[in-house]
Amino acid sequence: AIGPEVHMELSVVYATFASTGLPSAFGFRGAMQLGRIAGDVAVRVSQIPTDNVVYGRLYPADNVTQEPLPDAPIMPGDLVEAFKDSAPLGLARDDVPELFKVYNM
Figure 1 (tube, rainbow, N blue to C red):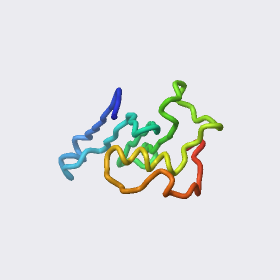
Figure 2: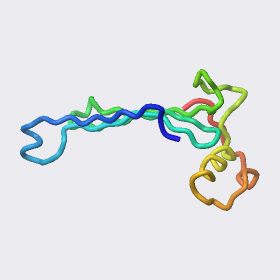
Figure 3: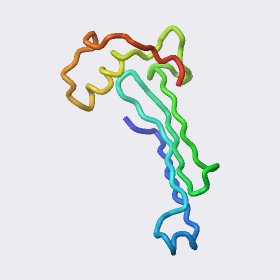
C-alpha cells in the first residue's frame, strides 16, 4: 500500500528551464507498507547542492507510533514476506539467514 499521502514537488527557474529544458528541482515524500514493514521516504534533487534531501526510515507496520521498537526489529525474513506480496520470490521466511536486524534507519 502507498500513502495515505504522497507529495510531489517540481520547481522551475525559468532561465534554467529555457536553456536546458530541465526543472531546477523535483522531489517526492510519502509512506508505503509491504506486509509487516512500513516506511517513510523523502527525496529532493536540486541544482543547488545544499537543497538536496534524502531521508528514509523503516518500522513495523503494526506500530501505531511509527517508532522502531527494540524488541520488534525488522529481520531479513520480514523483508522476504513483504516482497512476496508484490513479487513471486520462491523463498520462505526461514530460507533467509538472519544476518542483520534493523532497529532504526
